Length: 498
Ligand SMILES: Cc1ncc(COP(=O)(O)O)c(C=O)c1O
Image 1 (cartoon, rainbow, N blue to C red):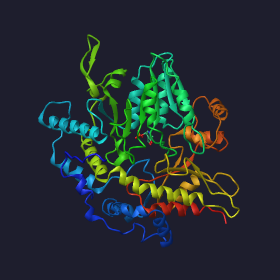
Image 2: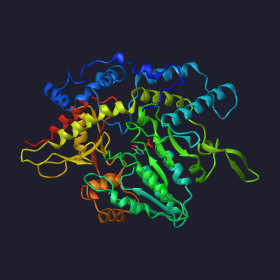
Image 3: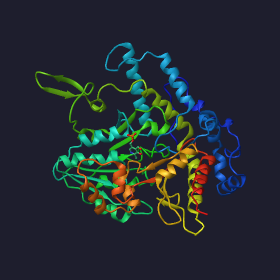
Image 4: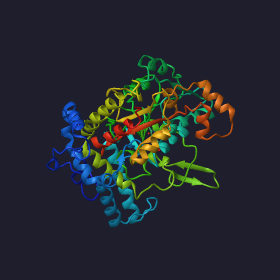
């Protein structure tokens, strides 16, 4: 069941965004621009896709800039796209309210405080999180939320930080805090080509929690590299074995429902622009109250204390979330988060999945079928080749007829020429890249030894004999349609050697 739509802002986003089924049409999004046999085959294989015509209407109404500019946007894991309604409604809101800094106590400030508190409640409601169990800390983005946990977690000598290989660098970077306190960091391997953790081994790693110590386990609910969906069942299993669990939900929540009534991670990090494009600059750490108590802030700032004294050289932290919100919140943008959540609720994750799964499946099928004239495969896919345990993000490399990987920069350039937005490189996820490209620890260590200070990405890539840790990433989202997928398929075809 999807959560109920609520809005505290002018106009209800749900209605404005077309939850009204009378807008539905049976028109196919691709009839104008894609070869009819392809779409016919696609629809034959995926009859349920016709039921998602609401997204075609949405695309025409809310994302028309894509088609007006002939832009194929395939980087939703980089950033989601906002609807026109979100921007208009937020603009209207700003033009009709007097918002003051919430640290004051005047009428404009009190209004802002109410908006911010309303948004906190809405976020909890969206994720079905009980206010008795969870609180929302506003951050600048997911990285900031992750850093708050890392810097405040009470690592001591002998404690442990455990994480999967395929984390974003903003999770990898947490390892510098345990290192500074003499605690140990351990990575759980992922196994190519599926890029999943060997289920038989996860229990073994989780058994290693230090009794009575501080043990932090982090994993991405969806890998931003391979699109792999890691089992949320790990949360309870890890907690039962003595771990505090940090779920990086940044790449997961744009297209998957995170139900914090069903799953109870200690800490969840996310960025709202990845979910619905606007506003940028606002993320959240959603933390269990009891897990929050475990964190010790290494400093204080304006807004995070109830009392601080210069002469007495003491301070008292403010209670709860406030102790973690340094300085002034992005209070003019925070109300726009409610609009975005209303928009997602108006669609519902079930419908988003019904739209994106067939498109993802089709794209995988098309790409994996491509062969050079010598019979060798064009595409190397990193991640599951089926739809089980994967999201709508694909990481691939293009392989030439000679068996060599085609430089990702060449793919990027050709995509740019066609006005297709994809992502190339390692997507800030070096562990997954190293596994995908089979770069050994020995090779990597040798490169780091060769230049102890700094090295550019290109020099490092040369050092590991051109392997880099790069790939090509295509990620789908709410405005995606069949024509977008076909544009990428056609781009791929252009690399087939005759
Ligand atoms: C899985 C994951 N975690 C964390 C981040 C960091 O997000 P941000 O750059 O918004 O802080 C990203 C960004 O791509 C991500 O995909």
